[in-house]
Length: 255
Image (cartoon, rainbow, N blue to C red):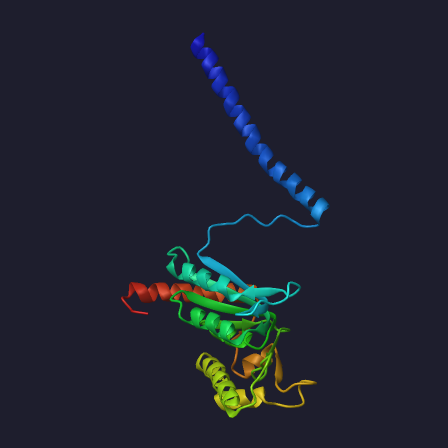
């Protein structure tokens, strides 16, 4: 009798577990509907195991000075530790960088670009909406870069805000900073230094400024970006680069 009672209890517990498992998708759907009704938002998709990490750089790149609270910013002190963690994580084999930025602090943006360029993992950048100003070297820092067909990139000279000392040394310093950005872009893309300077100091394209706005395929034709594409193209290329790096390591190559 005791054995029969125990078997019945085990069967009832198993039936309850099966019923709960069957109710889980329904419960998730109810929670999603509640979230949609109350907040106007859908719950994010379930995370699947992946060897690709996605990093998003949006708004204005914040450097050594705090920007107003109303500004949408990406803080470089948040990205640099994240890049170090990506480099040390053996489960991450590729990094997808999505850019929609108006630019920002020159040294902070250049530091992010230098970190991306020095990673041993496969990297692909994708410019959506816009990748302006210091966003250009960040986009070119990846192993391969994409831009959406309707996305734009603004190439313009270095700007400074705040108090300036009107001495020749100030302008020499500005020229050195400008050269750092130009050398990084030309060293990680197909555009020549002469052509980049020509685009940077062009007049007539911007209303109250000097510079050039490149839309989609124009950035590819100038040699700044590698190809026009979207998320699927970027992920496909990243998987290709991951496979190539894996073959290179197995053959005994040293990156």
